[in-house]
Length: 457
Image 1 (cartoon, rainbow, N blue to C red):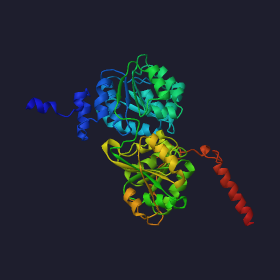
Image 2 (cartoon, helix red, strand yellow):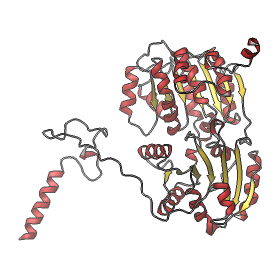
Image 3 (cartoon, rainbow, N blue to C red):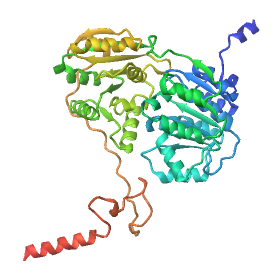
Image 4 (spheres, rainbow, N blue to C red):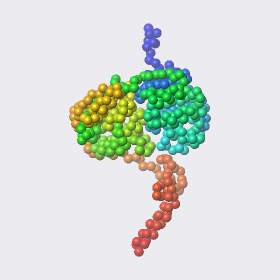
């Protein structure tokens, strides 16, 4: 009996070769059993094999490659500017989320990592590299920039991960990715995770991977087990009202819009009607993007309006509805967007909005994506709209984001402007402000004073 019970025991992280200190951290976090992608890939990765994995986003890939890397790097001494591990991802948002997910595990095993991405200060990244880090989580552009500056040397990298490789190909990063891989240690172990393995990704596999172990845990189609797919045909005059009612629903929702201007217009309309919504696209500063994503995660803005830049950059659990406000251009975009919901075994709903004239195009699109959606014609407030999406009537009272706490002064009483920086980071010198060259403040003030005196005369 005991032998039978033992044979049915669920696989544990300790069975996969994961370092015991990491297993303990996972247990304290309530993570006891690996997801299928983790159970499949970690043993091969820990054993030093090249791994090629096709799996949907939200399947647990970050821990799959992260646990293997940290297990292999534990106990090694970090060298200045010469990391041993590299995780390459396509977007800043994804880099931030991977880095955050691995941080507590890294701390537990004494392994130091560093986030390297554009839109962030160079100085902190360079200082961390000078002190020495074991691994980098990086976007291709900023990493190559730091290599060209001489701030980082990749010749010691023996463990390389390419995450979301197909999106890097779609974004035109393949030449830079090849340049980076050519700089890593000869014979470096490589892990490649991707939703699709065609085109440029296949060429990358043939050139840089040696006899990889292949794991394909999901087809290149949207999940039919945990996702409900719907096409809602809406008259163009009703579209904004329908979208706003969906935005007022209970639950976390992402609305995908084709253009940056369209994102801003829709988010502004929704907030004017009382929907707590944030806008995310590549035209916004990194600080705004980071704050918007943090508000979405925290539930301050349960509705997020985004372009496709966020299709794989947002890895947030608990998104119960994805809405294609503008139908995507191709099946791959549909899958990327749909992958924001039904993550880690949860269920979710994917809705595509379109006019009756677009029905044929949408039908062809979903068919190529392996989806057979239910189709319905809806108007604002329809029972079917409410049943499918949970739409509600918004309050009609404009919603404004909560005000940030005022920053503390950059200097204390008794200190000049050259004093210590405040908590909000480096202060902006007057010479950095457009139209306000340094040293002109007093001149402008005295000039104003003279003009006032002359006017008084």
